[in-house]
Length: 291
Image (cartoon, rainbow, N blue to C red; front, side, top):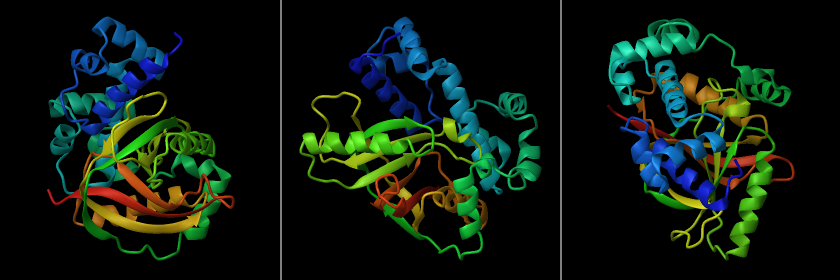
């Protein structure tokens, strides 16, 4: 099915609705209304664009989030994590988790989470980056309350250098539409320690002070505000994922905070995908809560 610009914008609205709160009730009928499609047509368009059904997509996103929570939140009960990630009961969560992950949630938490070497270490640039920063002190974050931010955005699947093309397109779009605020952000929907790099979901964003009048491949959303742990990170391409992994494995479990299910995001001072030397200087915002 050839995806029209209008259909793409509508599916982007649905993805925003899903990722805004994965614990919410997300029946297909509701998502079809978000997209302004009939339910039958919505199923066809979503599957054509995403390569999987909406039910399978939501199930996968919830499972990834639950596995992520189990890895780094050692104080919450499994049932609380299941409910937090949109599951209705512990039994259904345990059954689904074991089917997908090959072990129970408790086994995952105890044995697999930190000990297994992430797949991203097979990428030479990233493994080299990990070796460079492995023994560097990890600076303590600042805990702050952030305000919601309206942004124009483009989605990209895969964490690789091809993200540069998405950024080039978005920056050109901002120039053509005379967007005065050129502040750059990114939403990180996936944990590369769990999700293969070519399946990671990345959202390139440029700040804008108003909704878009005409939508295309570029749409608008609001980055959620709330309590965040803010880390200042500097480095070169290949080092960002290792830094993120260290924060999640070294800082998060002993921080005293719980991870929220809203997206982790970054604010770029220097964007490694646009810098000629591939250098980054950014603020990483990890959504957290006390309870």
